[in-house]
Length: 272
Image 1 (cartoon, rainbow, N blue to C red):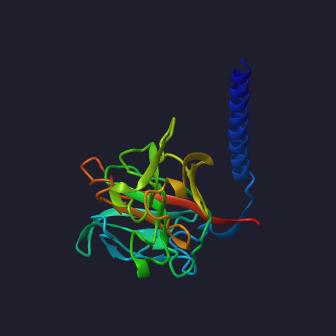
Image 2 (image 1 turned 180 degrees about the horizontal axis):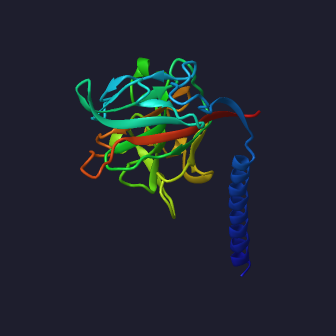
Image 3 (image 1 turned 45 degrees about the vertical axis):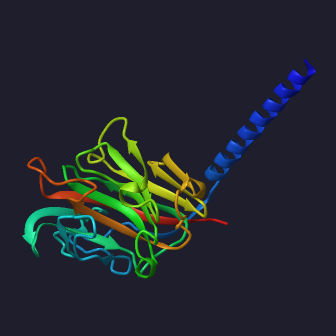
């Protein structure tokens, strides 16, 4: 009888310790203070191009995903709307040998950061074959290549799945269709009918994804089947692709033009 009581007491102690550890981890996450270090609120006049001190353009087509659009720097494809938003517009038109145009902007060479909170407030387009994304790419890609550089997809969306978004990482041993991913589905509503805030919080050994500050995906370095390649600076990419292996292809129901609307992009670092 005494032996049984000791076992029960031991189990109670283990449960209490586990509970305290979990509470401590939650508290650590909740208690992080973030300091704003970089932002773009897209407050330019209608038709104005993105701030060239903050964004560069990727101009061209097929970035390795069988995309159909030609990405340009034209105001027809990317400009301010005069209401505090950046609008990336996918159009169905013949241009440079492609059947569609759109835009893709990056902070490579202008801004990069290791760790912190990266967030954007955005409204999605809709329609089969549309593939908007907000993501981070390792700044050492020119030296080590992809996926060794690391890729953090803060938000990806298939235009035919209007209530669903995805957060994913790609690295050596878990890239392409093998990326480690989780989805978030709106209980009501669609991502193309209003703005939502998409964010990732990135630390030395963790990544956490949020929609409107609701945590839906969390990974640590222990969860990764290959190398944890998120220990160096990454730059930001915003783009609206048309077609590709991930999303499929436009069809007769896909209406053009379609807009990806970005209210702001903000980057924070942890206050020490």
